[in-house]
Length: 129
Image (cartoon, rainbow, N blue to C red; front, side):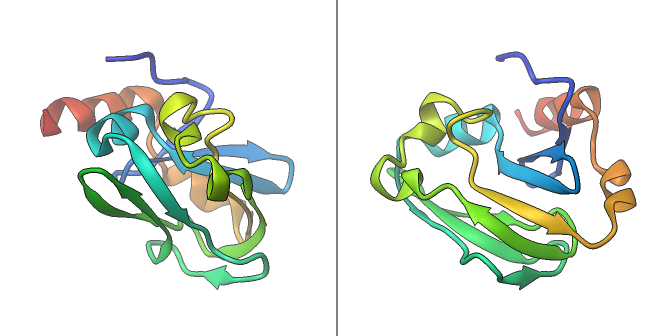
């Protein structure tokens, strides 16, 4: 298993969250992309869309099927990674940097404290394997 970045937070649905000032950057974890296989298409949300925690916010299609990306908190999309429209395999190549999916302005940043730490997320993966 690859190293799980300790500076990020994680969801049980395999999204990673990086706090960046008053917003968060969201993508899927290395574990998630490896389970999906080759990513062939990403349906991104639109800037300005608001979502509630746990709601579907984007879709990733891979050679194995379709998976959803869920919102980690209530908030509004402020930026999407448009490069994924032309190069969806960035999610496979670099899920924690170039393969980010969207940036989100979160209504209540304190809810992010409830997300999993790297160690807690690693325990979730071990149970799934």
